[in-house]
Length: 255
Image 1 (cartoon, rainbow, N blue to C red):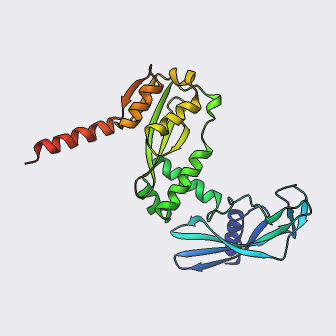
Image 2 (image 1 turned 60 degrees about the vertical axis):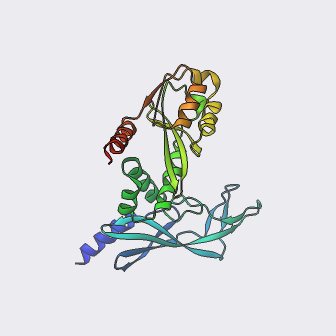
Image 3 (image 1 turned 45 degrees about the horizontal axis):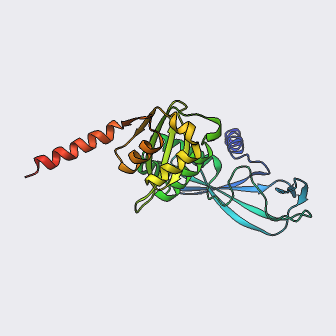
C-alpha cells in the first residue's frame, strides 16, 4: 500500500510541476479538486529588469481553473507575491503557467482553444465546464495570437466569415488564408467598413492580387470584395446556399 501511495504522489508531482512552485497538498471536494502549490524560493526575477529580488511578504491567494482530473474539475491554489524592485517596478511576479489577470492556467486555455477549432461553442462549454463568454474570450485571444503578419504574406485565396463573440448581435469578421490554413486578420463587427479595413491593411496591390474569396451571402462583405478585389472570384459557402434555398422552399410551401 505504501509503495502505491508513493507512486501516486510522484505522478501528481510530475503533473503539477510549475516554475517556482511545487505541490504541497490536494483537497478533494467531491466534484472539485483543489491542488495547493507552495513557493519554492524566497527570491524571483523582476519582470522589468530581470534581476533576482526578494519576494514581499504581501501576497494574495490566486485560484485558477486547470485541466480536469477524470470527471472532476481541478483548480490550482497558490499565493502570488508582490514585488518591489530597485529598478522601480511595483507589482506582482510574472508566472509562466498563467496569463496576467487570467482565471485559468495556460494549458487549460490551450485545451479549450483546441476544442473551439473543431466544435461548436455550446459543445465546448459542455465539455470544459465553463460559460459561453469565458470560452469565447479564450477562442478570440488564442486566435489573435496565431494570426499571420500581413506584411509577410500575399494571399491568393481567402475565406471571410463572421463569428459571434457575445450574445446580442456582437460579431467579429475573421479572414483566413486558405492556402496557409491560418487566420490572418480579425476585425470588430461585420460591416463593409470592417472588411475594407482588412484590405486597407493588406494594401491595394496585394488586394488586387486576391483571386478567390469564399464567404457567406452577406451583402456588406460582397460589396467590400467587389470594391477592393476587382479581379477576385466570389464563391459562396455551400452551407449558406443550402440554408437560403431551404428557407425559400419553406416560404414557397407555406400555406
